[in-house]
Length: 344
Ligand SMILES: NC(=O)C1=CN([C@@H]2O[C@H](COP(=O)(O)OP(=O)(O)OC[C@H]3O[C@@H](n4cnc5c(N)ncnc54)[C@H](OP(=O)(O)O)[C@@H]3O)[C@@H](O)[C@H]2O)C=CC1
Ligand SMILES: CC(=O)N[C@@H](CCC(=O)OP(=O)(O)O)C(=O)O
Image (cartoon, rainbow, N blue to C red; front, side, top):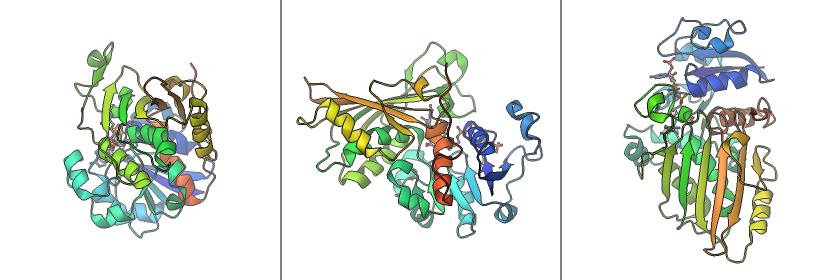
């Protein structure tokens, strides 16, 4: 049994991680760390665990953590893991970072899009991008994983079969994405408070979203030179879920049915990606680790419409993080994640 730790367990991503790890067949102890509430019982912040989990939040003390832990999850805001992760390099503790700190390989990209100081080049070289379905071998051999962002997970899984094709041309890729409010974390802001989200639908960070370089970086790794993408995120009045709708020029010789077969073949050995016969909605994957995808061709324009849905807190964060842990430790990829979506 492994001993895992979560920094940021009082947040949305961290509490979902705890829910998954608490049920994981190979996980024994789970230690929860807090930067602001150490010494308080976790249940005082999370009444959901009352009666079943009595432990207190622990202080973030690297020396003790290195002695205790096999795996450390960082479910912390941008800027934290770049300072915390270096202590764990070569320590025997595997680190899975849910923030954006370790995803972008070019320090200047992070500084431009996150407007913060970047992690060191050494750390960025060490960190493996944890989009499981396309990077299993590297993840299995890694000590540090940069868990992908929520939007990039939906977008990249929705485009990977295309982007791996000979002659793929992403020039015309336009992404229209929508997220539930939990994507913004638990700290209320003007953008996320009830009165500004209920009965409201808003576009935000147009051409400025920090996930743009992450998506472009990955498309470039797969397909060589890639043009800048257009990515427009929206906030919708629901708690969880992401739908990414993508428009891209198709190949005139490939029919909609053939595209579905190409996608099914690509994800043949990926239990969490389901290529659907109809367009999915966010409730089809609610509170599960699935990514559901469907696509079709508009015969008049020749463009593909691809729709990819995930739960931002599961496949977009904690579920994918547990999937990464499973690979890093040699467990079955689905362990602890065999959850069907909640319905209704
Ligand atoms: N929400 C989502 O859908 C997704 C989020 N992410 C990323 O995952 C990370 C966590 O997101 P989310 O759970 O939504 O965020 P939340 O704001 O809900 O929670 C973040 C937690 O981090 C802890 N924290 C804050 N400051 C520090 C610090 N200086 N050092 C250590 N811990 C700190 C806080 O706990 P405490 O005060 O107890 O220390 C807080 O509960 C972020 O980087 C986010 O961008 C990625 C994909 C999806
Ligand atoms: C709805 C909403 O506000 N979502 C957040 C997603 C934040 C996130 O996941 O940030 P990193 O991947 O950079 O860590 C946003 O758009 O900024």
